[in-house]
Structure formats: C-alpha cells, structure tokens
Length: 72
Image 1: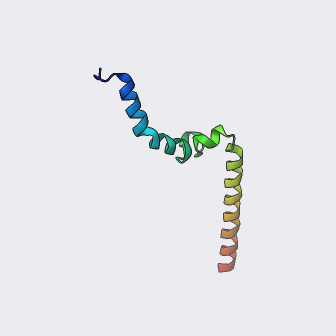
Image 2: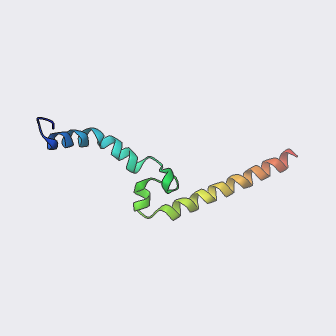
Image 3: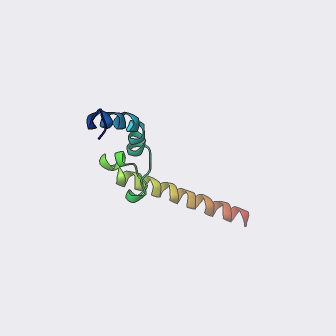
C-alpha cells in the first residue's frame, strides 16, 4: 500500500489520465461499435453517422463511374 493511501493514488491517476479519457470518449473511433466515438453512441447518433457515411460512399462510387466513362 502506498504511504499516502489509495485516495492519493486515485487522485493522481485521474489527473494524469484525464486527457486520455477525454480523447478516448470524444475523438477515438472505436472499432467494436462501428468506428464511432463512444460519445456519439451515447448521444444516439449512430444511425445518422452510418447514413452520412453511406451517402459519401455512394457519391464516391458515382464519381469513379463518371471518371471511368470519360477515360474510355
């Protein structure tokens, strides 16, 4: 056991890990939940994000098709 007690250790861990937790919850895309941040999952934005990605993918497919037709 640390001489200062568990509360001191917990306080230091929380202070030093705050940036990591912030990044993990708000920035990092989590592969286990479809590459969406935990914050977006909790806010219920999963369907909206997937729909937006699908629209972008479809637009990219159409652009590639147009470029291929123009090149032929």
